[in-house]
Length: 600
Image: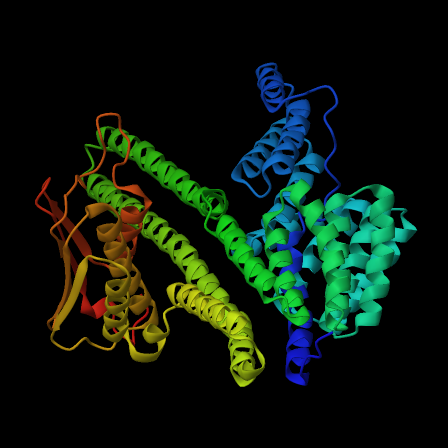
């Protein structure tokens, strides 16, 4: 067996303690009861029809219960998805119509559990869970209190890491679970204890609680919890420098996660499997596992389902503000009618008439101010939503790029240096192909890492990064790309630099993939007021005006992303294209919103 250096073993220990805190909220569906089979309803369509009929009959309590089961069924089939969230919110509405407070706050608990899977939704998850906890404490419903405490501890562990208070709270929750005979919650509490001790770098304690939790989880037949405990046991084996044993545990967890369609768990399993394969010296499988990690990450963070869930809660806030605006307008209208009536009645009194007119004007001004404030709040929420999505994308790209460069890239470089140092001991028939394979693997790793987070962008700035991009694209494409810039760019903040780079990168990719151009020219011009960017090609052209005769968007996600990023920076983009005469794209960005001392 290959003996690893002390530095590699220390890196495994750091990843062991760090990984557990980031996994819990993503892997766990929540502290809710396991998915119950709907024995009398065989398909989702039949269940939806049953709910529709119950609503028409105004049997809201039954409709709420079936909506909750529908959400569980969607989750079981599709994993983390917006249809489950929609079903839970429908159940929340039906419980409210039925006047069932227990069911209503129980649905708060279910929504909070589900939101806790996504880092960006965890503030909203806390809000729902705290409401549920306050209600069930008042009603002294201890099983639900235990469930709320576990869900909140799960979020706190991910965001705050280890603390004595958290450890004490988990031990108390485990004791309450045993006292009230709740084996499912006891298994979950032990699982969180295993995670906490892992962060404390106490593998023996983590191994003890993971084994206890695994036994209880098998007893209540909860697959996601069984899979999660196998994952923690694998982390312990990896920490102990036993990669073969770790991979066996990961494989058992992988099978269950695949059955549950849990993309978040599959992503973490791929990442840690790559580390174990690297410890064993099987760098081909380590590379394959790293690529799987990238694929699962894209499926989870960049899927329309995940984005829809993140935006849904913000959309509900926007709708609430819109309702408040409508109520304010209705109140203003009724007040207007009342004022007119008072003026007609009090027409003989000039003083009263003047007072009523003044009051009327003041009320109109207040109503207008309220409407303006509501519109500003809606715009701020939309910008916050877009910023959260973009920051999540760039942050995940940067993390994956660092993992590839600092992990797999270093290991491949060490192997290459080792082969070069001992190449005289190898036959030529083995040495040449081996060197070729290692060069190809190193090149591929650098290309993936650089595409996710260009080194030149963070080290040298926007223009050098674009020059590097154009140079590399010229090496692998027959199309001739050129870059020209006039004037000195003002100091740009990091957010603006990344967004401008991504916009130009997307335009170049579109020209190379779809335009069939022979030449592509990029020009950057700067003056005191704006930055002008033009991308011109001599390709086949196209229609970028909007929708076709069926109402479908011709532009696609790439062009939509360009428009949203430019609008976010306060700029404008214009497309000029004719069939067979190429395409010209002109972007104008105001410099006062891109300054390094300002935040967009």
